[in-house]
Length: 360
Ligand code: NAP
Image (tube, rainbow, N blue to C red; front, top):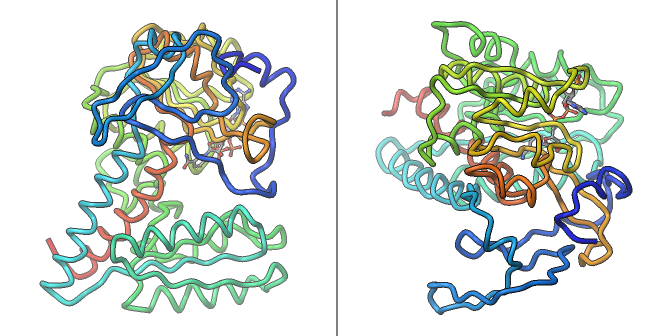
């Protein structure tokens, strides 16, 4: 199967669930061109010499060479942000002896959730933030979870509390998220934080990490948001809805597309900025996109691919190969929004510690 053939994903390829065995297979990125991409079947190839140290030679398809879209490199930006956080954490420790701390709660045995928690802990370590982990079995009582949250709320060493979602079915997500102190709600999911995000003249203590990462990418690449037409595809509480609120706060004119929207392609075609958070592999085709648009693809969709070492690969919601011939800039999947989410979690934890200790 050729990776440019997006129609085959929706028609025949099986969307895998993240609980599937096996870890995520990551493409390697060199400069702005990606290599090592399983699933591609290049019939016309070129060899490029990159100005890296030491110089590298890579093979890319002609289509890749011809494509004009700038690749928005989330991995690189996230690294920049993590370096900035490392510096700030150490400055704070030296000045006032405080180290930011993040408490992460994992309830149940989901493998994907365990991987996310492990990655968050590793990311904390890499920037010098302390992490505290609580793992509870699937059949724990909700009161037990609430007790841990209450203790973390009172613990001065903890500046951020994150409860890994989804929770076991018998637990009430609303009760649990509401119990997190809004001053430590680094995920930004507390209704007060979301409410403030939605209101003019109010400031949330925290903004949810994934949509915050999308906007940060737009800022760091210098794309104008003010006055632009933006379309957000998806309206979930954790990505689509807060992404639309953030774009509106930045003075974009925002339309939300969801599963009941009629003629989504016509609406998307008008957008200067598209943020897609749907969870449908390659749903947004090149023909849906306005030439020159900027695309932030939040979707992470594993699809079967026997040519990949793990038997699957990750694709976004947007057909990347088609889109990059039409738009001016696009995030890859993986390597786009994903790394930004964790970077924003670290940033929220640092901001929380600074606010609590009144450290500028
Ligand atoms: P979600 O809660 O399942 O929400 C999906 C949204 O997409 C819903 O609002 C749904 O509409 C809409 N939708 C579904 N099918 C659609 C269609 N055919 N046309 C238009 N809209 C459609 O998912 P989520 O948690 O927001 O996540 C979305 C994607 O982002 C997933 O692939 C997830 O893995 C990925 N994600 C990535 C990161 C990251 O760090 N990169 C973080 C979080 C999520 P209705 O509201 O009408 O049902």
